[in-house]
Length: 169
Image 1 (cartoon, rainbow, N blue to C red):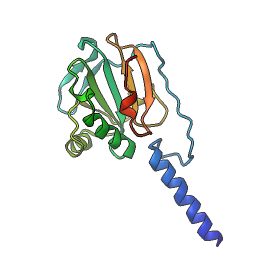
Image 2 (image 1 turned 135 degrees about the vertical axis):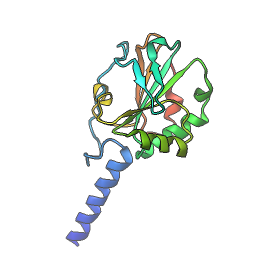
Image 3 (image 1 turned 180 degrees about the horizontal axis):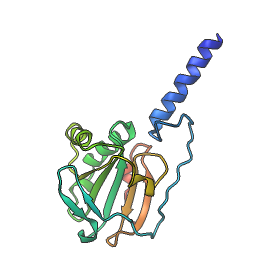
Image 4 (image 1 turned 30 degrees about the horizontal axis):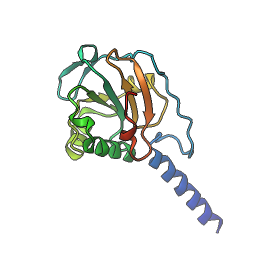
């Protein structure tokens, strides 16, 4: 009986850690998520190269921006992209959307794009150099920027319908 309880507890903790997409290192059901950028602060990264080799300069992009920090293995990230594809945001020509794959290699991002119909530029952040400047754990992270690359809002996309909360009001 004791062995059975231990196995059930271990399995339960593992499932919670995976379901939340907080981190593969944590087994705590309520991890402490920290966000290292706040409303009104300027987003530090403006120059990127996507997995197709295209250069992207956010300082040259007019209008609002949506930055998605995600991982290909995360069920919440997958749901977020499905919600994005079903939303009007994906068709908004005045909005720039970038997705940054935390600890992801370009090949994995290209495959993810095919499987989830991702049409926005994908940036590989293989060693978390970008992600670590904005958060400690928790994906997907959505960072909404205004036309001057200042943070309007940050969201952690672990709940359904997170895309409905993407507004610049």
